[in-house]
Each structure stands twice: as structure tokens, then as C-alpha cells.
Image (cartoon, rainbow, N blue to C red; front, side):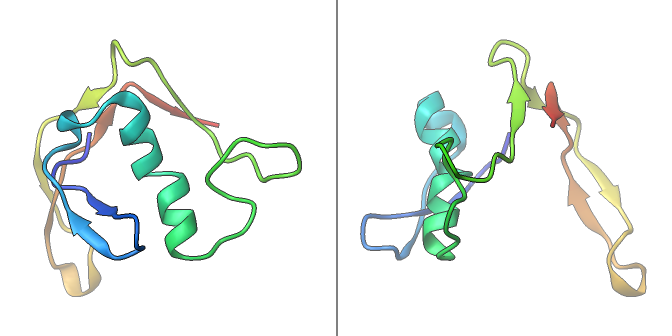
Length: 92
């Protein structure tokens, strides 16, 4: 999962919150779907609704989690970053 997620408060301003583990499942899903779509004013995204685009990421709440932290060198000029791969996610 994502630690220290950047969430959007009711005014549309960024608000720093704790770990997504502090959120309910519904709040965590909203934090990575409809809220970013609202922030970036992307119509037809972030919700499952008739006529909307359907970008789905399927997961089982019992098995989804965070993999081991690792350093990867995939940024420009070979710069590194810390990657924490997701476990139990299946993109569609």
C-alpha cells in the first residue's frame, strides 16, 4: 500500500495525512480514484458509472499489501529511488 498518501481535503487543497492504513477501505479507494480525478478535473474518471471510462484495479482486501522495499535505478541519468511494489493487485 501507500504510506503518507497525498489526499485532497474538501476545498480541493492538498492535505497530508498518515498512512492509508489509517483509512477505511472505502476512504483509501477514494483517495486514489475519485479524488485525484476531481483534483485534476478529469471528467468521466474516478468512479464506476454508466458512460464513464472504466479503469479497474482488482484486489482482494485480505491479500493486498506492500512488498519489500528496494532501491531501483530507473530515473533519468541512472538516479535511484525507493520502490515498494504492491502485492495482490491485478490490473485490468
